[in-house]
Image 1: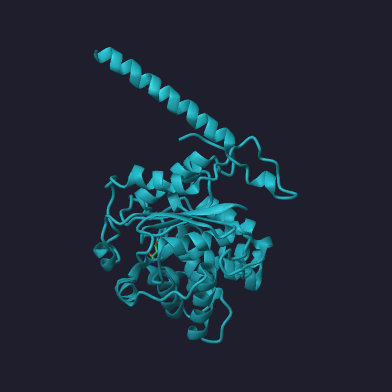
Image 2: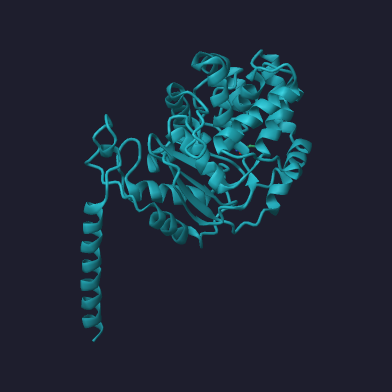
Length: 354
Ligand code: GLN
């Protein structure tokens, strides 16, 4: 009896597997439909985004590894069980599962978008020469990385992000903040507000970042008053977003700089590849290699629990959940994005397996 049941179950599994293969064959290759697009017909890209988003959410919703960030005291109060997953396509279609409306602080996910503004205002040479585009291989707040080179290294660690803020051309701190805020709003396609309690909590405890800002200034690698740069940077990190906002921001990069919801060109298409390259090499700090090894997508994380990944020319995947690993990256969000990237076969170096 027992073995009979096993045989029946095995037969059912085979039938399901065959059905799954038929589904994969039916799926549409998005790239081959666009005139002049690279033929990627070898990679069957499923267009069933909604079910893959729901599957990723279901698969990792019970994962409770990791802890909320607590070095910014108020972040430890965010409900740890929140979990949202979203795909936004270059056409502006939104596929979501879970807690995608909850507002959390954007934190370091803001960094590539201000780097985009530096690219827009001053071009790739300024980003390369005044900040840097090399991975540090060290944590996001590393003072060692700073001291080795007397330099910020890249715009996605704290040092480079504070330097990026200071590079934005403005006559005053208020004007600099307005430009940075407006730019992030344009990427998100809506008006975002600062979570003032997060700003206060981080600014009151920002001794490490203050040290970084002062050292950079001392080495002529900060381009405004250090305390003002620290304040604007901390405000930028305290902007409230939901997971859907992050996905729209990523979809703007996927859509070569044009926000798919508003149609606004937020950055030049010609600057997008350089930005994605820095995200690929440094978006996860000292885990950037492992991220590309397993997920294969340019992406950016933040200690608020958000992550956004970009499938260039196609769509973005964002996820949010507050529990982080040692490197400050959301464990559920990483898993969800990695799973979706493998299911859809969209890693930039080719399809990999789950
Ligand atoms: N605002 C945070 C900090 O400066 C950002 C860090 C992060 O999200 N990795 O520490």
